[in-house]
Image (cartoon, rainbow, N blue to C red; front, top):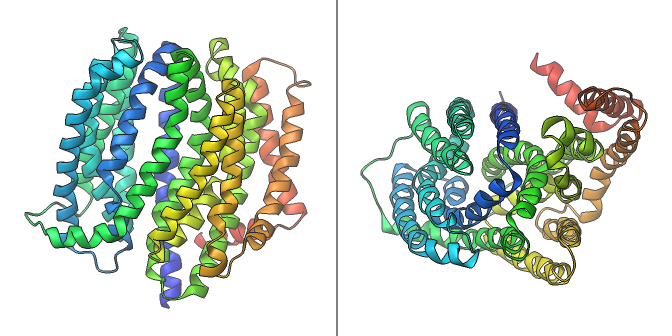
Length: 481
């Protein structure tokens, strides 16, 4: 077997297990989220949503770009992984201390005393989160995604049972705290059991410094991105109320479920694949092009279809009290539509070792987005989030720009590869959206019919117009059988 065929086999196998992990785990999380939404109120969701903003920002600092550096480095060894493991735990301790001390100030700022205890308890996830970042880096490096799948499924089941039981017993927002804590702890323990890597009593400050040369730029870019993305939640929680933030978070959750599933699989599998071929620009370009074509073909119809069925789905799954999230859901569908294209371009840049380019891109994108935020904040939450979606669309062009020189893959070429899937998805969306006005029956019947007709229409259009990516996927499935 040639090296190229072997790598293709690893990529296909890795994507299979990563998609299975994301799809299975997020499918179960989706069910848990639906049950919790029926047991909790938008205000309770918003309360934990405020705290999660601070946890997410702290996690970005704790993971500090080293997990990506471990994957990108050509010859990472046990000393590298163990050094990052201990260093990450030290950073987690520092960040937790800061969160603990800041908890009263956060509660005072948002004028809600319940926030302080929740922040102090939920901040404990930083410790298992630090360990998990090293474990998943090893999984990506070795492409041991089967173990990650098993561990994730176990963690989702454990955390789901605990959170639903707590919600049924009237714990309110604390049910979501229990879900987060139990998920991180269970995932860390399961990964220790199923993944071949274990921490050793080794530490090298020199190795940390070496990886820091690459990782600090990713840390700065990640922190910038995390701070800015959570700025919307901070503003909604302060200027408006917890219910409005809960509606925004719930509307954001559904499309994010889709992009996290495929997007995370692309990120986890393609970075090591790109890195292993970083000296062959033509091969990397071909891999990037294929990834963009396939991800667009799969993600665009999902998000456009979700846009079309938003009213029916929310009514069927969550109930009438959550209809306030529908406008946000539709806006975020548009915002996330080209997310896999973002990820693929950025992973190619990382694989080539150009974290400096990565950081510059983040600075430019956030400057554009900050301008949009300053404009949107003067109006309503809907306007603010709509401008965010537009800025995310502009970011597609910004992320693609460097690969014109690095890989010879221009923005125009990328859009030629995306456009067929975009046009078919738009046509399918129009058909599915119109069905809600003519289909008989209740919300569940309408939803099932809209989904079935949408899937059939998109597949039929792809076959009728002979889309190259459709043929590629069919051939790949046949060859796997």
